Image (tube, rainbow over all chains, first blue to last red; front, side, top):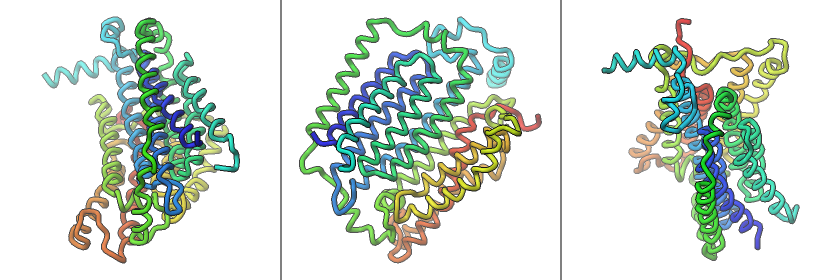
Length: 124
Length: 315
């Protein structure tokens, strides 16, 4: 087996591991982390395909390589937005839980709650 | 790579061990530290796959910026960790999830083993047309010329993510300062580094920008280093992220995509297609895009790291 094929199989395992973490870990921040592990695996598959397409003196097909660079920046943007959403959820609900019953169980901190209640009142 | 015959296997084992650590370890802090190491090992994989441009991007954005972002969020959410872990799914869900994920892995693994031979490649096409872009680095040529639409939309995606994060601000702090105010010991190591490193970092960023046309590097790597230097100064309290309502920040943010769009439309009249460059003018058009785009990406990355507005302007 060539090194490129080995790295391709490694990428397949990374996708599986990331997906598992995404499903079973209850903390949203850990889901974001797992999603990034998954993303690393997907990008690596692209890298393997690019490496196999090496030709004309290039070490790899530059088109999938360029797509991975674009993908890395987009994945950072998505991660930053997800983290902002989680922090906002924490500020409003006092918990970072994704469970439906978590909001009823906890009392929100007064400032953020009052702030949002006022906003809701203005809207309605 | 024939320098180290076992490098591929060694790196693959390290990568899998780190990924497993990130997924199963209890403490979020330990998981994020593992993720940063995962990103660094991943950049070694990119070197083995002959993709130095991606290796630079991975280590700067994938490992560095994402790591700092998650470390900050993890420390703010530390209090909620124990409570959430008590609600982990039961054994049945875990087993079903594990089987599903194993099936995905096996499927992808088979796809890797059954990839067509000889491998399809666009490399000959890129090599044949590289001279038209007046660039030496094929990956930069793909990003800024052959698939420039992707790059333009990506700059827009960064803006959209920022708009999304900013719109999470409650009315009270709308347009205010993002994130928490950072304080550090003025005589400490962090402040010292924040004062000494940025000049060096800016030179490195300029070099990456300049080198990108013919060697590994380019506007994304350059912008990330600039953003990292800005972030370092912010974390040390040497400077503060500007309020999100500041006009100069917004102008810098939209500058990149605006110039990209204008150059694209100019291409429609001078070269017959959106984002086409007229023969002999490619270098000028590409530079006209790259400079503002690099600045816009750097500001967008820095503001995304700073987060949603949390403090009002008049405080």
